[in-house]
Image 1 (cartoon, helix red, strand yellow):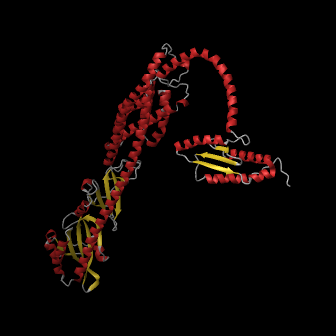
Image 2 (cartoon, rainbow, N blue to C red):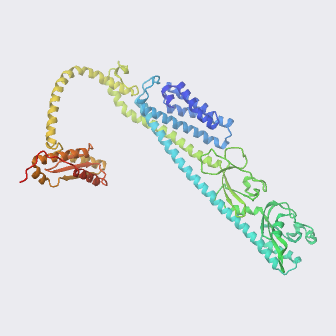
Image 3 (spheres, rainbow, N blue to C red):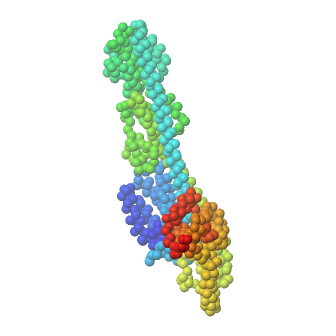
Length: 630
């Protein structure tokens, strides 16, 4: 940006090409080279046309940059269509920020850019244009910076809120699932104990099983087997067939729920599998061993209930407080037990997922369920580990979140454009009110025949109105020079003599002859000025009076010359210790000194004064004369 503004298109093109190398290597994409170079050439050529860089860059991104980037991303990138609008808008805003910062650097530090081939304005700019552009720069940077900071904070809060919502949903649904499984697991366990303690003959278990099934409707079916894994009771009986049960012709010996419950003699919750006999629905079996009343060591059979996996819909309905969240339940073999209808994931299929969005700067966990090779995320997720080895995933689509972010940036962009338009209008009105009187004075008293600004060494960046006014004043000044020379010579001589006398008088009036410090009158006069200054700036002012202990004894012992030498030595130490220009040090009385210390830290002043007292205590003064002792 800076090179384009100062040196034109070709140097800017070279600088843009060099700047693009790092991003090309990092992103493995040449689009940055294309857009950086195009923007550099645009800014360089518009600068030669005396168009301000920020205005030119806004035009570039609105007319060329954003449409071209959208077409490029659509045809040559893997970005999903839902991401393109936001990313395109973000590219434009980034361009505006860079152009504003570069222009501001050129404007503020204009004295630094002493370049031989610097591009200069063909036509001197008016005060209208300069003032309007300066306000526009400041407003653009302020609005964009504050908006980006605000959006960033909002995004962080939204991410934290979303993470918390997903976590709450996962914990809530996970615990509800655990309660659901534990309830039915306990039901089967209690049923096995009930049947084991029952004195009813095996042929009577069919009636008891039917009653039990009526109490637990979430079981699709329930069966009881003997020790040979042949079904001896089943419900609903009509689905399996009463003849099969009566003849004990249906065996489940190959099923893991029989093997785990019968041989290991434990209540068992199986992974999901396809059912048979009662139908081909996907089921999860819960089984437990049955014993004869007289034999509690060897199992006589098992009781099994097949959970209806659609029952998890009821559990998911409890999470309606959070919209657009979906639920996936997988077993210990990574097979899908249940998935929300909106996800369209087949039950009992292998659950496949991949972490995605590694290049996204976010605290969210991102995952892909469909396109596993796409680096762009499809869902935000969290998971919950159930105590039986199952895992619950809560997912939410990523695209709506990006759409919300796009809306925020679009609002920022719209507010910026409206603010710029209002700024241009208001600033031109203000600048007109400022410059019209100057132009009128310049036209009234100036000679419009002088057009060469360089003849008067006027800064080329200054407004045209100031040049006209300066030319008129310059011409009038030439007529006065001849009258001033003679007068100035006389005034200079008299002024020198007067200043010399005034300095001597001022020194006599303000300073103490002995110590060279301010006298009492001067200190009181300076007190008022210093006090008013501290009041205006709301600063603390410290006033301290220093008195020399036993000074009479010094005079009596060493004479007045020794006392004077003591005063001068202490005054010299005070000048060296209290050496701020704002400090007022005066001799207030015979051996008393007054200190006025403005803008002083009240918590440290006492230590500071004590430090000076200790310094004076260590001071050694060799007297010139010593009064003889009697």
